[in-house]
Image (tube, rainbow, N blue to C red; front, side, top):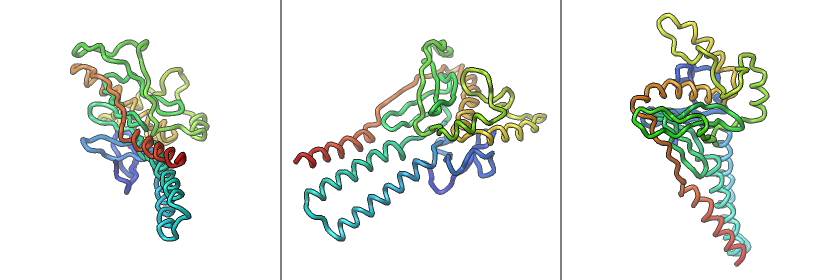
Length: 263
């Protein structure tokens, strides 16, 4: 997990720092991960997680001090607390998106996806940040398949609230064309020796966007660059796997609760 002591904000150049454009440090968390990656997640789910943990611990401490009416009551209440804690872990604490050297890792409540940059066609937003990818054709250096075979992974950690949608509708610089949400032409390019004037414009653009949309723009821009960089080595393969610890954290306490309730 990423550090919870700081909440750096993404800069236009793809790095993190406290002076980066305003993409909502109070609502989004991005930190350097092992291997030079960035971890993106929203802060409200983390707040919900820690509030619930405090509530659960306080209740358990109260039961330990004052006692309970019966052993069965203690078992049922404990099973309820553990079941909800498992759900809070899977739905609030676990989800995140990691942008690394080789691609994007989407950690959803019960599934993990490894999506190489070379397979990504676009990153945009709907109710969540969405990663559109096409499976590689398997040939070294081959391009991704056509958009007809494209698939989509929804990033549970990066949702778009109704308020954020209303805000994005008021952004004057929002692209008006159909298709995936992308930064306007030129804004995603790194300024060269003669292009330093682009940075303030890009920073203002990212600052005007809701948090999740700004992250989608950054990931989409990086995917476009890394797709070309990794073309010679091949697009790579997308992998998906079940997160069995998260599944067990929910199912086992729920099963124990069912048994305790029926006993």
